[in-house]
View 1 (spheres, rainbow, N blue to C red):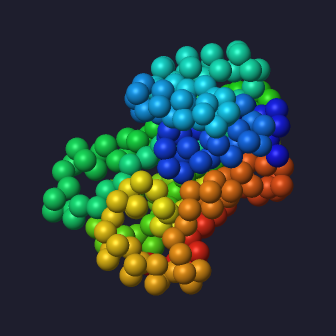
View 2 (tube, rainbow, N blue to C red):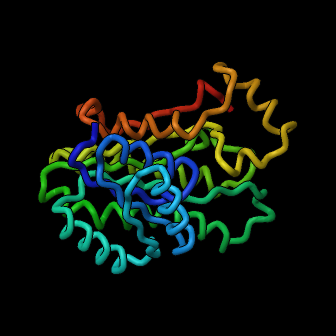
Length: 245
């Protein structure tokens, strides 16, 4: 479905991001994953190599625009295009506002919003020149319903949705599609470490009767990246089993 396409995936070393890397690679895209640290990138690439999945990896500071510019230029020079960007890097939060420092709030916005803006701004000139491209952002179900604590996380994801819808309108004339996927509760490392008594009540609120698996979310990204979604842009696709918070 993605044969011949060059895809950059941030936050690609674990969880949903790693599953997207695997699925895009299996669908014949040339994948370049970005992670936060050299060790995590190296570990992810070794794990993928064991599955005969060959990818490249970088570990830039996503809030250093000049560093991103140099890396993306290098990727474009090597492969001749930047076809897909998946802005998946992010952090969550669950502290009450009284316990959240202004620095913690700023850190969430820096990675979840500002870094997404930086990556998008870096790749857009290449996509405009090609007159073609796909930008996909990781949102969350909390971008629709909020959450009872950790206000920085839903605030950042509301911003992701706003940027997605606005850029879809701005960039459509260049044949660049911009969409987001809003996962519900998903069986990542973070969730699997939560106590059973916390997870089971949540499952009861989901009509499909289970939490999502990373592949469920990755499949949505694959669909939106593929020609099958050629007339879809500005959409926030919920992948949450119809969960309602």
